[in-house]
Image 1: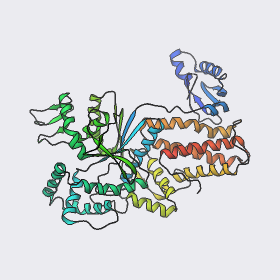
Image 2: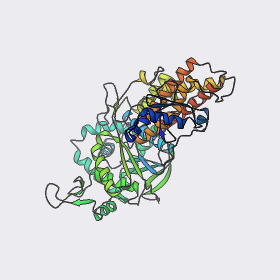
Image 3: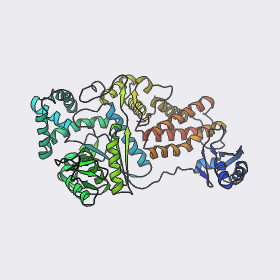
Image 4: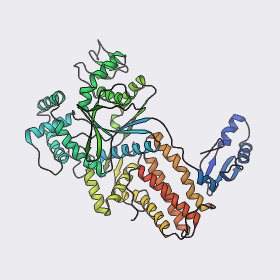
Length: 524
């Protein structure tokens, strides 16, 4: 908050909304007393139409804002640019477990946060249809078949557990299958059938993308031309001797093309990220209807589409931090004006349970089963989704999440249910009101809630700056707590200003919950 050039933060002083230490900062530069400067600031602010009262206390400036301010104030959320956000990207050989769910919920929330700042946002789902895991699953399916199941992603996921046990004995066969996948695309239909059922989970959790890009299409239409262009422009280095003899590496000596001519993970990923930024073109797309709606799918035919992103965000596990850092370095060399961000997240698990697709430890803890259990416990799909999403997103991505139902469904605080209850309570107050909401004079109790309306902009910008939806969850808990305390102290039925405060609480709670993807309910 900036009033006449003086920076203010949200006050923790009872009865005041804003507090500033500006006088102390200026005192060092101007070599004057903070007390003297704070009195000057107060003198200026007293004439401001947005200021009802300004006082200087021990060099600090504290402000009560006028009703005029609250009626005119609008958060500054306009920014420019195109952002490409890649998230979920689950291997297409198993159903989602709750670890994948953290990726999905984080990416979806970031998409909504960037859209709130009016960025052009493109959400991408990367489908690794040429990976070793898919090759193992496809090999097992061709040789042993799979048990019938109402969901193909589940049937393949269960078969993959068995395939993993046989991999060491049949590795040569699996790698031959992998080579055929790369050269002939033999597994595409198999992969798309798995993907179709994975997307039923995506729809249930409200995860929506604009584009799905298959690795096989990148390999066919982009890889060679991009690598040749990088060589031509000097961004890749060929080694004629030493340990790296015969390889192409980044300038930081990270291998992109091995001596046998095959690409590393790093090489493949750099190509995809550069396509997002417009370094190369050539991917073709067809619009299709899948379980989540209309989405552009990369394909051998269709129309060429480009993104030309100014900022690329990849939501990927923290264990991939080193290759992601190398990608960021390469992109910084090529596009110093653009930004590449790895949103690294830790695992999410239950107490004493971690998840592995290969070992099958996800069985019983899939995203589908988690939702089913939530509905069973709380008797509402909307509330179950809100509880799950809030619990996962309230933690900063780099912190491990241990999912606990008792905490997720708590009505006492620190949960999505607590936040939703405050929203529903505010709605109930407004329904029972005998006068219309109208902002008149703000008393001390009103201001203790109203200061959180100002904080919305601060927390939203914090979420954007750090690519961290937990800032939104933190805000929602603060606002819900402030309102619940206010509700217990103030008679609202005939209180015009109190009803106006309640109306604003409801508005900001709804905006925050929508950014976290929480379904809104009107009754509990």
